[in-house]
Image (cartoon, rainbow over all chains, first blue to last red; front, side, top):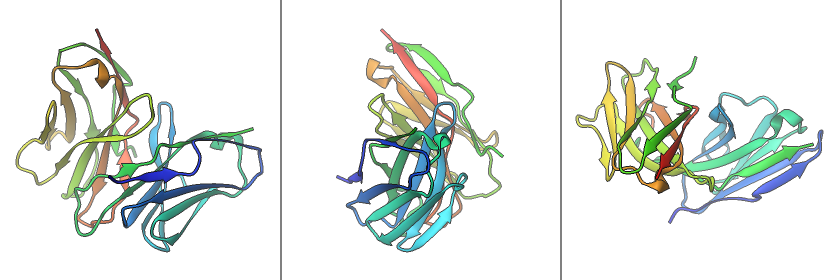
Length: 115
Length: 116
């Protein structure tokens, strides 16, 4: 079974803090994603990585950065957390390998509250 | 511009009845694919079904089927014989292009409540 693990289920941080959200997958997937989920807005793509050290901006990258130094790990960084970044963050991974119809597998999510 | 539109924020269905969840999409790429995911209250995202733009037949997976109308750019999810466990958020998502590494874009979701 594919496992995508996010380091924390719940996180409370202070405004201005640097925040790291970690995501690890155990199936050697090339593609990894970070989304944030807000009521009424669905899942919005923050960043996408199609392979190690490769990254691409999604629809809402402002205020975030990412790191993918190893294939299994994709980190989301909030450089200076703000209250409007309070949200549920979901990490996902998928196998590409020439296939276009493979589904993405998701972690359990990290509910981040910035106070 | 919104690429995936789910116009039903919430829906009710009676247990054992069928229900259709709407999804329309916008793309100029001839190669694309549509995914449906279910998110129960526990928060996990569960893949349900996939439809490719070149697939000749509508996708089916057990009680789930996809009513794919290419000309209308719609990919509605049909759940037959609803069960109480079908109560959840449902998300439609799209990939564009033939590149095997692609962004996956989601809609805003529909919350389905199955009544006993």
